Length: 418
Image 1 (cartoon, rainbow, N blue to C red):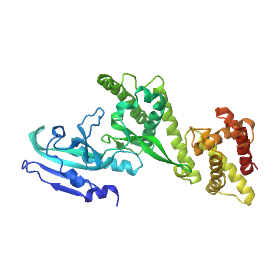
Image 2 (cartoon, rainbow, N blue to C red; image 1 turned 135 degrees about the horizontal axis):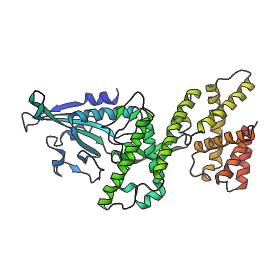
Image 3 (spheres, helix red, strand yellow; image 1 turned 120 degrees about the vertical axis):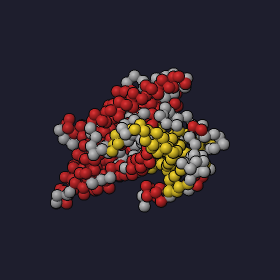
Image 4 (cartoon, helix red, strand yellow; image 1 turned 90 degrees about the horizontal axis):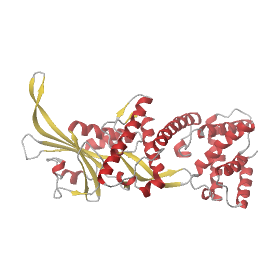
């Protein structure tokens, strides 16, 4: 049973004794349903006091809505007040986004309060319409970094590009699935420390941007470039407003976007969007689960270089087996007999110590890309060993021990140079 159906099964309705015209319906998931039901949903969120709930001193960004953070037992939640219709739609959107693999806040449920009738001017005169207030309840994420802290001077020198990369990755993850955010801003996302699995290495702690406001999200059959760039433009504009908010509060007098950051964001977005398309193309040809087996490509062109390497392996296998080997079969054989042995060598000789900014997979892919262009330059296949030696010199990350380099190259030559 999917998450949306589980939420619907736990729906419960209660009627407040405050007014005959007021009724409150709640829809929560999980063990938190009972304590959440005891909160004072019969009054506006801005009127809640410390007697009503255990508030958490979390500073939120600029928002059109009242948002409060509370703790119940061992769990923490964000409560957002909006319209009744918008609350249900936003939770449904969160569920759909999460089913598509987009990192978002975790929706816990909604509260729908009918406040009574209000007079509304219509074409036929004044009519009485139902006025409803809605509440969106989401689980408060652990290990998140407050927006006002992200760009402090000491933090930005080391991690500025990592923050931008996390945010850009969120945009690309939405746009590649034809999802338009519509109201992208730092206030509508959270930057969290998360565990991410790297093939053949294990889990590492990384920065990840999480969508934290789904009210304006739209799903489209296709997404034009102008819509994608509009999302980015809205985000960059929102930072100017956030800077002004921080300046007035005295939190950070430094600019959030340094010289060149805007160019970096736009170019990195284009690169990552292209990489996603290349990854889909690579996966379609090789029938490989790239994220699970290789890890995400880091630079444009890596997949082309790797595919060329697999085609070379396909030719070798076809010659050896005396038949035409399909590409997907060659890719599987390459993974087992080429890729994994290389990673094993990297681990055995502790190569990542000499390339601290690389994972084993990204280092291999970088070498493949270098091999591809180097072979084109010389008009023939230069071989993996020569490519790695050349790459080490060019990258300025030459292995410290000459003996270590010699042993590694000898081992690689035994494996791959035919």
